[in-house]
Each structure stands twice: as C-alpha cells, then as structure tokens.
Image (cartoon, rainbow, N blue to C red; front, side):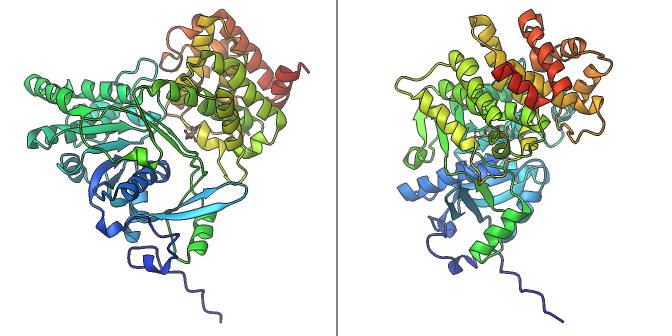
Length: 503
Ligand code: CS2
C-alpha cells in the first residue's frame, strides 16, 4: 500500500520563515496595526489596494495601515484566510513570467453578515481612518439609471426597517453613527468599484440612507458627516480573474506551503485617487498611486475603453463559443472589433487629460486583454451586465447620439447583450445561462417578443438599464434590431465579420 503524499504545511505566520526572503511580505505582519477597514474581501482587493497599502507601509515605515477585511456575501474568504493568519500569495503573470509575493497587510478578517457588531466597532475605532469598498456594481443597491438608492430592493427595505445591516450602504451608516457617537474623528470612505464618480455615488447613497433615521438624529449625523467624512472617487485597474483550483495547486507547489487563498493577476496595476481626505491616509502615492484633483477623466477612459471592451467581448465572444478573454482576442475579428469600438465609438466621447497618450493607453489595454497567462472567463465578465452596461456602453451611446459621433460598435455590443440574455429562451440547448440581478425582469420583458423589433423595443423599455431616453432614438433602435437579427440568424462571428468587412 502506498502512503499518501504528506500535504505541505499551511501558509501562516508560523511557517513564513520557510519561504525565501523574496517571497515573504515586504513588511513584518506582526508589527502592523489596523488602520483601514475594507468592505468586500474579494480577489480584486487583495491584488490591488492591499498591495498599494503594503508598499506604502514599506516606503514610509508607518505600520499603522493594516487592513481589517470584511467579506460581504459569504464567509468563504474569511474561512480560507483565517487559518493562514490573513496571509496569501499574489501571482502576477504574463507570457514570460510569474512573480509571486506573499502579502501581510491583511491583518484581520471578518464576515460582515455574521459579525455586524465587530464591523461597526472597527468602523468607529479611532485608529481607523480609512474605509475602502469593493462590492461590485450591484453591491451599491442603487438604480443604475438614476443613481439613487433603490428603496424597492427587499434588502434595502429590510435594512431600513432596522435589522442589523446586511447591505454595504447601511453597514457604513451604522459605522458612521457609532463613530459620531464615540467622537472617533474623521474618516475617508474610498469606493474602488467600476462606477463613474464612485465616491459621489457612495456619498449620495449613504446620505440617502442616513436621511431615513429619525429627524433630529438624521440632521445631526449629516452635519457631522459634512465636517468629518469624505468620499474620494477613485479609478482602480488591475485584471484579477477568479482563482481556480489549478492556481491553488500550482502556487502552493511553488511556495512549498499550502495557500488556500492565492490571487492571480497581471503585472499591470493602476490607482488614481481623488485628493479628498480630511483624515490621514496611507502614503499610497509612494507606492505608485496618483493622487489628483480630478479623477473623472481617468475613470471615464477606463470604463469606456477597457471595461467596455471587456463586456462587449464577453457577450459577443461568449455567443461565439469562446470561454476566456485571451481565447476571444486570439480571433483577429474580435480583436479588430474591440479596437474599433475603442477608436471609433468611445474615443470621440472622452475628455483626455493634457499630456495623456491615448493611443498608447488603448494599445496597452489590447495587449493586457490578450495576456495568454490569464484564464479570465467571459462568463465572469458577462455577469451583472444590467449594472455594467449603463456605465461601460450606454454612456458612450448617449454621448455619441448627442454629439453626432459613431455608435456602430457600441450598438453591436448592446445587441450582443440582448442576444446573450435571451438566447436560452430561443434555444434551450444553449450553454449560456445569464447571471444577473435583473435576469428575471429581462426574461419577463423578452417573453412574447416574436421578432427582433419587438424584442429590442421591450428590452429598451427596461428603464433601470436604459433610462427613459434611449428607446426614443430611432437610429439606435434600428441598429440594434439589425444586429439582434443577424446575431440570431448568422451567429456572432459572421455578424462581426460582416460589420467589419461587409462580407
Ligand atoms: C471586468 C473587470 O469583471 C469585469 O466586469 O471588466 O473586473 C476588469 O477586469 C477590471 O475592471 C480591470 O481593472
């Protein structure tokens, strides 16, 4: 009988010393105190803000910026990270290299839904000066078209009724109330999600939630917030696909320690942060972040170029049967399509900061998307399109319609989304199963549409996504009808080829 291979010991503070010095955290995790609360303990945060924060601690020697990370949707990340003392590996990969580093900045982990009191206490701790947020677009529970808190959302309604908060906006309100009551001083709440003016949006939603408190308390809290709480907007950029079991096995083998929570990413990383802090903050600029007065142009460029291409490729590539971004971009028509979407439709709508090299930026985006070392699933990007479309694609369409510029490629992406969301209604053998908070509303709207024209009209009628205006544009609707028709009749690749080459 063969004896099973002994599994490698678990990554933890106790086993760190077995790693070579180039792999170990740049700072001594034991010496780090918590100064940041993070909401949304997903892979993206761990590959992005946690690294900037650790590097800033290293550059300045100020070890008071450790992170208390709260997971929001499930306790899975906490369950994996706690046994390893919050340590995890970041693997930055491209075609030539895979660089590993173990990160030590994440000093505490808690499951927000299971521990609302601990979360509130951490948010009202005088040693905490920053709360960062990555909860994805739908975590804001707002109406994407109007930008207001969605009071019809049952989770929002339940939080309003006064249970221990389960939505991020109300968790923040609870933390701010406690902070105000305890005189714990100013704090910055830093949204790091892919939403334009993310700080302005989060400020509005938190204020709207606070307004529902009994009147004297609401007024006092809002006055205190005006003097003590800022909501800087930020642009965040790093491609971080979901970690796979193969990644866990590969990285653990390279470390010689079992890491149940590694993160795989690309070498590139960017953070542009609005200079709006009343509280102290880590010197993120020493770690390569750009602190600037106006983040909006950077956010808009990234959303309308990188994220728009991502979503367009997710729907059109997904319909064509591709599984990953790199696989889709290996098809020269899909790659050309993404380039033309950026050049012809998105670029004319952008305000480009002085001295910024837009052509180089777009070229770098295409190269990053094609990174063959990443297994970035199109289904992951396609998820939650109802929340992503308005900021990535429809904003460009609106500006193009108003300014008389082109929207041919944007329309094809939106038609791709329409087909993607409804293909199973037309063909129950299709492997595409949409994952979207508005999937029910979309299928309901699509049911009974018996031709492309009525399908497009019904879907454009969903105001949470398309607002009241886009259905009024005959030119936009007509283009969508033609594209939806072609996609159904000829498939995505033929439709794209015909659009690109006229054959
Ligand atoms: C992607 C983003 O999943 C998605 O929708 O478009 O997560 C994208 O990878 C990041 O924004 C890159 O910074």
